[in-house]
Image (tube, rainbow, N blue to C red; front, side, top):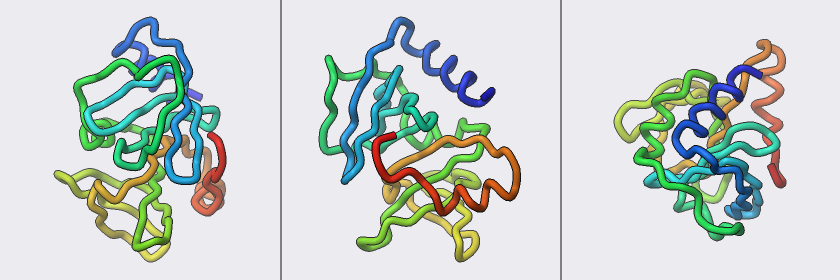
Length: 151
């Protein structure tokens, strides 16, 4: 998967030699990350499901030898730099929703949801999944089948 290799290279270039694993507990989920980096307001890394970013405000605990190496970027900048489709999870009231990121404008995310195109404040995000797009049929099924347990 070319996108994953490219993201791994980006992360590795930011923190050479970082090979430790980190378990991130956020809500009812546990995500194991390799090559984790700590941005200004998020943690990102490679999970068994692919590349992910988790906003710090959604994290209740991390388990590992230490905190990941810090990088000088925030979630807004990270999302703006993505070249591959990005799935997002966000809260609306107490309901967890899923959508696709279309673009970033300031602190707002233009997204595609089941109801159509809309806007979300970046603060509403719970999880960012960077996904390849293999074909149109798979895209529609992936929208409803995001992993709900350890990634």
